[in-house]
Image (cartoon, rainbow, N blue to C red; front, side, top):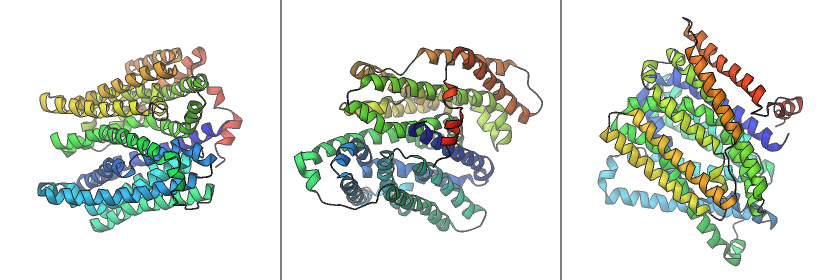
Amino acid sequence: MSVVARQGFKYSLIGYFGFLLGTFSSIFVFPNDMVFYGKLRYVLPFAEMLLPVVVFGLSFSNVKYFAKTREEGKHQNFLSLSLLGILLNFIIFVIGYFAANYLFPELQKMEIWQMKRLILPLVLVLAFSAVLNKYLTNFKRIVIPNIFENLLPKVANLGAFCIFFFLGFPEKAAYLFFIGMFVLGLFGYIYYANHLEKIKPDFSTAYIKKDGLWKEVLNYSFYGFLGNIGNFIAVRIDSVMIGEFLGFEPNGVYNTLYSIISLITIPAMGLYSISAPIINKHLAENDFKELDRLHKKSSLVLFFLGFVLLSCVLVGFPYLTHFIKNGELLRQSEPVIWVLGFAMLFDLATGFNGHIISLSKYYRFNIVVMLFLAITTVTLNIYFLKHTNLELFGVAVATAVSLTLFNIAKIVFNYIKFDVFPLTIEMIYALIVGTLGITVAVILPEFKSSLLNLFYKPGVVLVMFIIGNHFLKIFPLHEYINRNFLRSIFKF
């Protein structure tokens, strides 16, 4: 089995472990003090919204230009200059940040100013980590970096909360632990990169100046910055606007529901990361036929696995709420799960559309549609929150509409420019089987035990998928459930 499959599978295992850790924390730990947890949930998302300004697309450039720079023995020089660029960007950003706050004193009333000593260092650490994370994907190694990127933040949240609430330490001590975990992750990135290939810092500028390469890199990075900032606004703005218009309790409900439904996207994260260098290779060789084959196969895998997980979540969610503190609040907003779930499922069905565009010479188009996504999401959120009574359901609809339009635009563009198309007839078969499974599970009688229902209803869905897949041959299960693959996944 290929390194893509092994790394993607291991990546998913870590993702699911992180999901279980986050779910455990949400159910049994964080409800004890929602105020302090709210502060923790404010710090990281806000730092992530500021992150693109400092990174400025340099993380993506380390994927885009890796093949070229490695062939000429200058990939570490390129990495070194990228990290130096991050430091310079951060210094400029901090100067601008303080200048803006002193020119407009009303900004100092915002939480971002009050928590600047925590947020600003976190932005720098995350920026260095982002570049090293993308750099490591060039070696088709994403499992260990996934621990630093996705698992450590959950440990940081849980550990900081426990230090403050259960051990009685002051907030500063908890915050110190919180940011310390991200610093630990940064050193982990450095150690692992050095393990794969001895790091030799090289800050000479002769190569980057040759043939005006720096202009090409700066141009690509700038558009990467625009797309990245649009992406972070689109993804993070929901929480900001819910907190502003509806309050922190609805914000907590929405984020809990979003966390639950995000379960279906975990396999995609690994596949997207490990596929980037392969997509880049096909584009460089103009091998669009092979790119289309890879696109269809990966999209089907993501759609099928995502629909299996989504179907289980949808039929099991009502019974899961019985075991969650304030579960009734979640149950009242159950339509959010359905709307967001199917929007994310369509996103999975479109595969790595965005990666194809961003790694091609048409990367500017990706920036345009990403900014369109951000503007549409913000506009629709304002409309639903200010002019309707739909509240969280309206926010979910706004997100679903903008995300769907975003994906349709990318499908059409890739079909026109590269003759690649992610959707297949097998997806329709899966949709029929999944819809039938959900319907059967919902209409079947319930037991008095919520715990029994929690396993019984999703179990019915799984049986329906297994039977349907056996007869319709939707998902190539035999390629994954075999001795060689199972043996290979334990080869770290």
